[in-house]
Amino acid sequence: MRSEKEMMELILSFAQKDDRIRVVGMEGSRTNIHIPKDSFQDYDISYLVTDMKSFQSNDDWLDYFGERIIMQKPEAMSLFPPELGNWFSYLILFEDGAKMDLTLIPLSELELYMKSDRLLTILMDKDHRVANPPVPTDQDYWIQKPSAEYFDDCCNEFWFVSTYVSKGLCRKEILFASEHLNGILRPNLLRMIGWKVGIETNFSLSVGKAYKFLDQYVAPQTWRRLLFTYRNDSYSDMWSALEECHALFRESSHFVADTLGFDYPDYDEKVTAYIAELKKEFG
Image 1 (cartoon, rainbow, N blue to C red):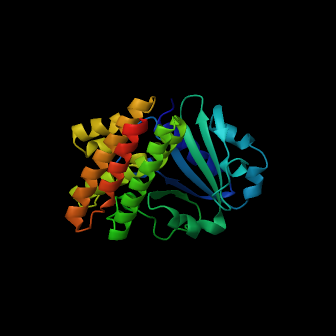
Image 2: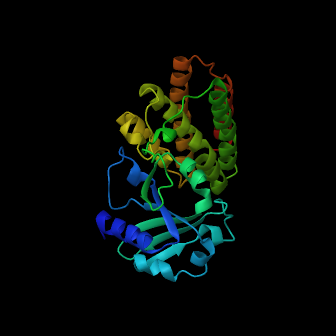
Image 3: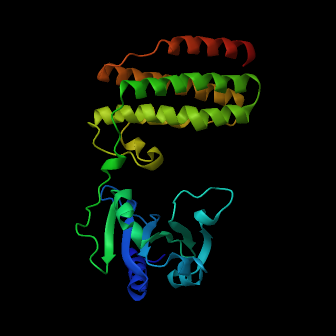
């Protein structure tokens, strides 16, 4: 795999030679001093350009960066609606394993780009358009202290959707149950555990995308219990996973409620009893 130095030289040399590119920025984990560098990190690069259409007319110019295994152009896909407005991105995995997410942005939207992400650094500014280059910070990704309303909404969603999981298990519809456990229940469990971590760290850090650094901030036993909830390949395992989700959520949410002075909802006890009866009858 090419080194970071080699990749950055390619990225900047291409921009330097092409008059259409006036500003080059980089975002993402490579700008975050709190994330250890490794070879799997993407190169999240933005070219702010004067002529979008000339780049989009064909992909030959991308050959400059190396042979590709696969490329995705999200803004040109039909199954997944585009989300970047006038911007256009290329997600590229190269044959040597390097990965680059390259975004083209109209130069006229420089101000919008500068506000888009605080984990952003300017690598090249040919016309000195950026008067005060930003210092990258991951502060926008820190765990945020919840309001009482957010706390109650999280609890309500978690316990309400638990009944859907149990219904799927009772009906022997494991895909339905798994979808609700992993797609709705688990994100709220992770959110609540994240709030607990936030309290313990004074809401001063990020646990990473998809909570990937969570294991660094919870007790080893809690981590093992959380991993146990991912065993979803049989009905008995899913019942056990659901019950462990309940136990972890209950412990974390009581901690959050007690520490922040929130009311803990009484429907926990009612839902738990309801699901226990369903398991006894149908499980």
